[in-house]
Length: 151
Image (cartoon, rainbow, N blue to C red):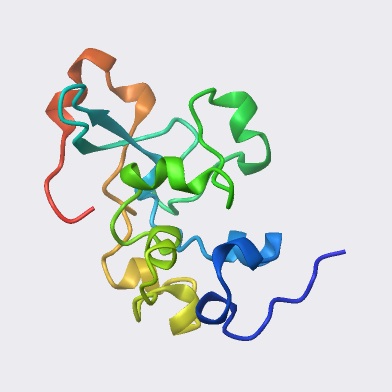
């Protein structure tokens, strides 16, 4: 049985004290973490592409098979309080997990703050409608899909 989420849990409790339901609710649904990225081997710099994982729905920015994502996409990273630190560097700057890990507040457009699951899309902070599905792009052409901006 699912536990009730605590009021304002995202601002009152550290990440490692969140319930599994609260942890999942932190995701704003922007889709940015499910974009394919290129990492410079020399500098460690991460470049985002507008190419989405093959499971990412390009319109809703949600995983098409969230429960089985790790089995279907071997490179999928399941963020947990234990794995977060090693993966923060490639998470978008606007990611709630990254923001909270760094002691920052969630932005007003975050669904937990706004109270609307659509606020991330309405604010233009999601990738909805801007994603090219992975199966439409040859891996050697990924550099042609690098996008600029705040990630």
